Length: 462
Image (cartoon, rainbow, N blue to C red; front, side):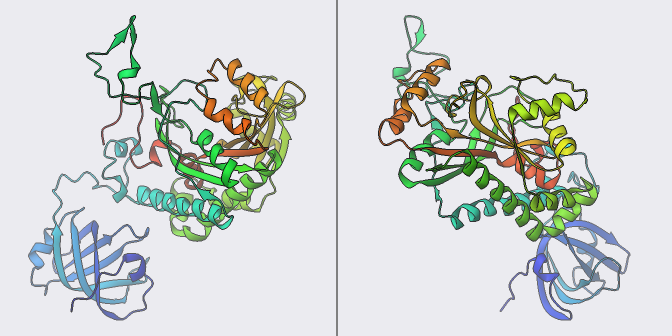
């Protein structure tokens, strides 16, 4: 009976000698020294590869000599201690099966390629060291998200992707329609959406928050983790049109409770990455972002600072630092302000709370001062904002007024207002952009490099 495949990650843990080890993977390199061929095999299960030593005695040795980088192979042999530096074991091949020969035009021939080039072949970049590591870390973090909330009794809610409500009120939404764009039905010159699939204008969601709040009003603690969409014509390193959001919502809580959960959540994610992605983080620390591991450990070990927006602006104004964007009360804090606050003025993660009403969303609870809302942003060294959250406005009359002030229709949000009409309670929540988290944990500087297939303006090729 044929022995089953052993993943490379498990092969590298075995104690030699071990006969009949079967490995399947793709070739990173092929070295031919006439009487022996060295194959470097990686199957994506870990950062490291295993070397197979193929002697001339192999029945298909001449075929093995013609193997190319990227080819898929199955190798059976004896695992032995390796005499070569940098590897503990190697596989002395007794059988090599060519599963899929790679065409010589395989584009990943070099050890390192520019990230911009690799974005053009996103369907192949998981074969590289960098992106194999990125997406293993991403997978580990995704599992850690669920573990954190499940351990705390939160219910996982799947909120809709198609919606008629703009959760942010910014209007940057993708339209969803089955109408023929070349033959749009019109009444009095306007598009007749009653003939559309949902009989009204609908969009891809920018957030699951509003729907999540309705479930928190019945289940107390819930979280969402799913794709969201923003039709923002931006080509920065921090924006994509499709991204994933983690959004917990909690009944019976205030802003302090919200910040407590956010701090515990971030520390859990960082600790999980440090504990379970050591090899991948070591690669990032060496090749991508020196100091990464120390920074993540610092977040885990730190007590997060908390200060009001007013205090943050005062400290930035008094710092003497020259900023590209001026700092003044009422202005949105820019990344340069957030980084200076966390990296220089405080030296650790900071919750900034109680922002001016006019620069925050309609659903945030109005404070008694009449000028600010019970909002909080978690700022971390290097990237700035990682989490945005708030205590939600639970008072029906105040929320209705905020919706009208934002020039939104209370009729369109009648279902949302019902949660305040029928047994309203104090509640809070936050949102964490998953890709921004992965950027922080890996040190990658472009959001396009931490999502499998980035969707950006004029780019939807894969």
